[in-house]
Amino acid sequence: MANYRIGCTIPGASFMPEGEAGLSRGALDVIRAGCGAIVGAGFDYAEAGVGAVMELSDADVASLAGEGLPIEAANSFIPPKFKIVEQGACDSGSPLYAYVDEAMARMSAIGIRVAVFGSGGARHIPDTMTRREGLDLIAVFLRMCAGLGRKYGVTVAIEPLRALECNAINKTSEAIALADEIGDVNVAYLADAFHMAHGGEPADTLRGASRLPVHIHVSEPPDRRYPGADGGKYLKSFAESLRMTNYAARVSVECGFSDFAREVRLAYDFMNRYF
Image (cartoon, rainbow, N blue to C red; front, side, top):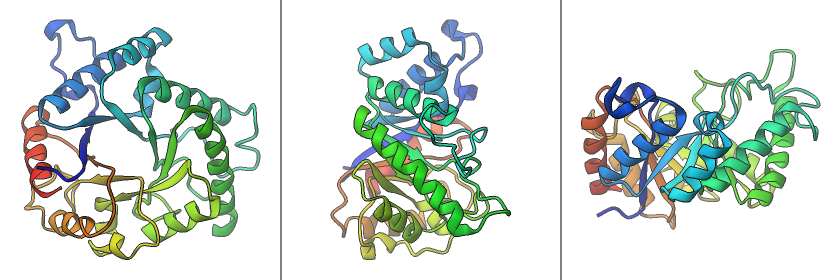
């Protein structure tokens, strides 16, 4: 039996059969079907993509809100078309501000309480800027999110990404330092076992961390398959170390699936056994 609330991210529309039961592959159908399959496999909740949430119509949002599906977190917060690391990008009335305001309003209505801020393309620091200058502008963005997060009851979780995907915030320690700098309960950080493994961070990193994350992602290194697909050595060690901390929140499977219907159940079996 799992020690935490365990969940799984909803994959893209590719998992849905063409033409069956009138499924249109629209965002609403994908979210409903994905959540149903994930909960049906045994998971406690589903994690959606913010992009899919933003594709919903107002009527779709109201419908999901009324259905009360257990969609508790969302990832891929900011699309790469927005450039966070620019002066004035987060000013009130800017396109980015309007996007975050709308995204949080929709997430809040559906019941999503954690927005995962990976968004490597959006937070990339350009070569014309120093790392410190770039991080200062990311901090401006996070302070904007903190204010809107209080309004909507959404916490933004800073996700460290491997260097291959982004040149800013690559280690757990860097995410912790930035969250500490912001100093707001609506800005926290996420630990991702896949990125930790790629960055050479030990599986017991969180045991020595100055603060615990608000959310966790797991997948099988080195190629992001479902947990247990390659034996789960790193994830088993990660789970064992996590139990030695006071962490008591959610752990989401975030991976690629080649056969979602089969592998989501295998992922649940591994998560339920080790987490």
